[in-house]
Image 1 (cartoon, helix red, strand yellow):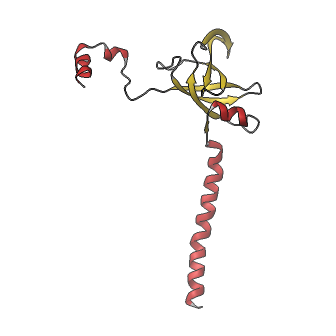
Image 2 (cartoon, rainbow, N blue to C red; image 1 turned 180 degrees about the vertical axis):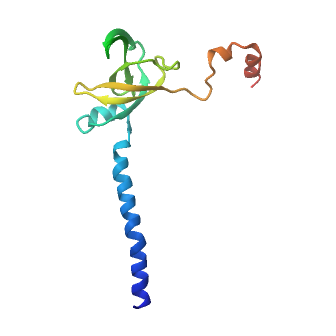
Image 3 (cartoon, helix red, strand yellow; image 1 turned 90 degrees about the vertical axis):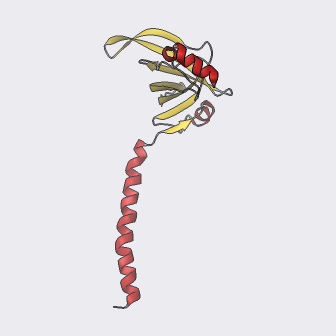
Length: 151
């Protein structure tokens, strides 16, 4: 056998399983990918989106409403609010405990499904904050207030 043929067979022996394994891994990972959209992108693509997505934007001022609902055999509090990107808005409904940083006019990312009425049914809410955030309990300590003022 010529050296050229031997090299080609050796190369194929290693590359074919490598590409096959890579294809299998990416095929299996496609169900675990969660894409991030803004309200405008969701409204433009709502017919295409069938899986779990993340929606990010600002919580619209005056939009947070809490009401009691029956969920999984128990009374629970359902929170509904509107996320905006200052062009379009999407209503979000969430049953569960909100993060401490969640409030109006604050950045938020929610994860869940979009229903046919273009309402996001969130399973997870993540509040965002800037790098200057200081928890109220720590901010109240006098020695820390002095250090913050010195900066």
